[in-house]
Length: 140
Image (cartoon, rainbow, N blue to C red; front, side, top):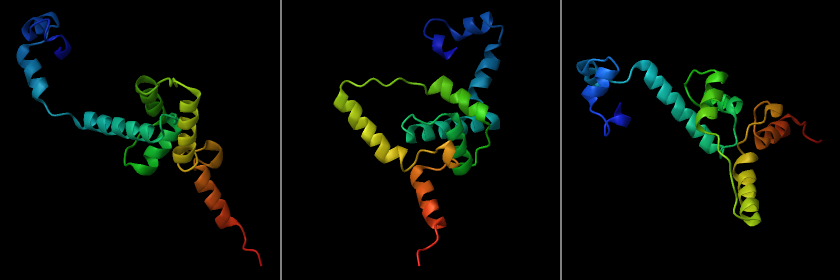
């Protein structure tokens, strides 16, 4: 209704939608429910991890990040749906140099140190490498 408030009066929209104006204003003043607050917290977490991954993570890896880094219960389908509806973007580079620079930055600042790989047990390449070094026996 707020999106159409400039075109139509609240009173008229309430009448068309068969909603009392008093009910509409009471709803508008209500604080968000616990479920709505959890949904907003979850959406914020998805946005944070998606931005941190420079848009590269899909729902499975963001799900792992949320489980590991936030006290936000969620399921894979919720993460997938959120990404699909809010975060899919195509990237277009103006030049080969811009693409190369962005790719280098992505690899150096995200792919190697942070990007989770399913094949590596959802660890980044650097984490995996460090863990492998710790498992190596010391040379005598």
